[in-house]
Amino acid sequence: MSAKIQIKNIIINKAKYAVLNNNDTEAAEVAREALDNGLDPLEIIEEGFIEGMKYMGDKFQEGELSILHVLAASKTMNTGIEILKTRIIATNQNTGFFGNLMVN
Image 1 (cartoon, one colour):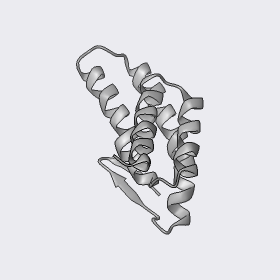
Image 2 (spheres, helix red, strand yellow):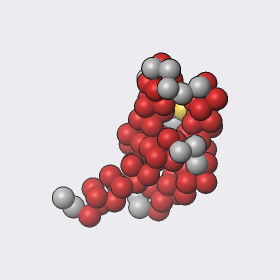
Image 3 (cartoon, one colour):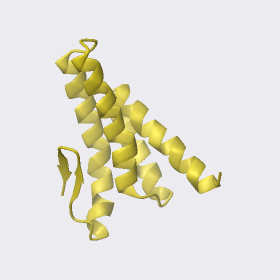
Image 4 (cartoon, helix red, strand yellow):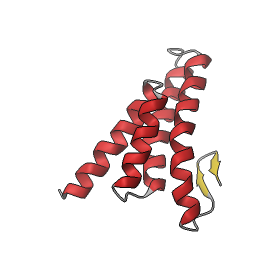
């Protein structure tokens, strides 16, 4: 496995865990780290932040989390996406769709 793929996988996992831990600071740091490493922001959003939110949504549906946990996770996800969104817009990828979420 190449070093770039390993870095990408680490950053994706950090993005997921930032959402799971409701850590806005970590989400922002992960987003900047992804950009600093030249990673595709859409991949980080889809495979990291959104996967973390899917997990939170599943746990909410199973009755293991309250809506407050989901809302906090959503805020964390948005913190990371806001930083990544600047690169998406700058590269003329003006709109991305991720399930029910649209970033433009």
